Length: 163
Image (cartoon, rainbow, N blue to C red):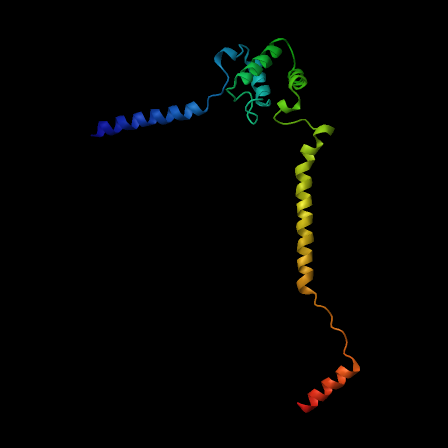
């Protein structure tokens, strides 16, 4: 009975370990990996910053799409040819546009991307403050009544005397 429990525990450990190891795998195929570890590290870093044009919100390093594979191979070819990281990025931006970058560069043409969210947040805060001030003003300040006329004062005194 005890041996059966140990065997079951071992099998369960192997299955769970296999599942966890499978999730850590990347889309990079063994035939894509460069022999030089330094170049491979640079290629992986560049690939992590490039958008898969098919998957769109996934880097080419993580994507299994055929286009992502082609881009990974292209990055490695450019690095082997002697291009710097910046030259590889510039080449891909020239070929595919700024959209290929997962994090767009800061520039005049991308200013709306970078400034849009903070401006919307500031605008919302100002609108909330104005609405809050208007509500505060409605309830706390009572209208001042008009002063009594001479006839109203006389009527009031007559009513107070009569009781």
